[in-house]
Length: 320
Image 1 (cartoon, rainbow, N blue to C red):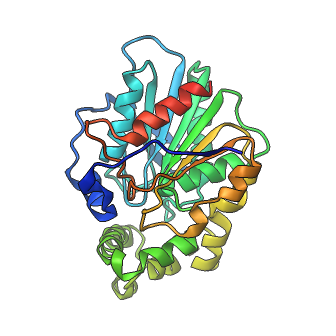
Image 2 (spheres, rainbow, N blue to C red):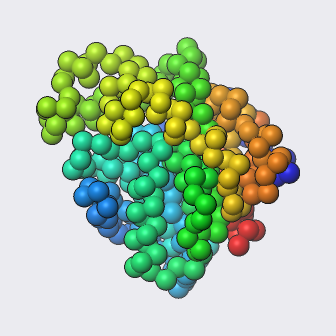
């Protein structure tokens, strides 16, 4: 019955989900930088970039982190997680999904919420090249959905993978899109829309036969972008099929390693499906924690370290 009573209490102002979300995403400064960028050649001929940081102590423990939609390894939430883990004797590897490290990827496809083959390529590479004995996986938002799908769709995982944490994760992609489309979320949805359209205009220059500028310009919603590009570029017939097949909710009952799902009750990006209490109650491995506050990846405290970082480290160390 891993449903956890959360101890998180938001500072007064940050009980407002919009203030917490916006502050954490745009105003937070994290005194941490990665040390090395490594280009990984993927099994389909494409590439993605990995940003590495290392513990000052020799270690055989590694955490791999995955960012959210239109994000990258330099987002404050990624840097904050890297800082707390490297300070506690873990090496840190931050995935930049395809086209998210400042350079467009080679193929017409890019990344999506269900592209677990890219995480598998990263893990195969890391395990082949290094001798890590304990690996923790952490995903934020879209990266959290990808992580949970990866864990639940496979009958067996590489033996060093011991524990996982998903933060502010939309477990039902279609339902969360509907939540994002609500008037209270217009600021966020329009920002995502602009960022994704800018990326598509860049992609159109590289793939003029597949995409037309007029098609991109005509997209006036995230759904339209997923209909035009995300779904079809990745082998789905429609956005609806993409959401249905890639939503992690259906894979949660099959998770077989200790996994924390940390979703704030006031996260305006999430639908009720992102709080799978019944699944957690019936699971041995899925731990669900739903603080009242925190917004979207905005678990701010009266100190520089955010709650999601403390909680991820605590949960990870407790389940090794």
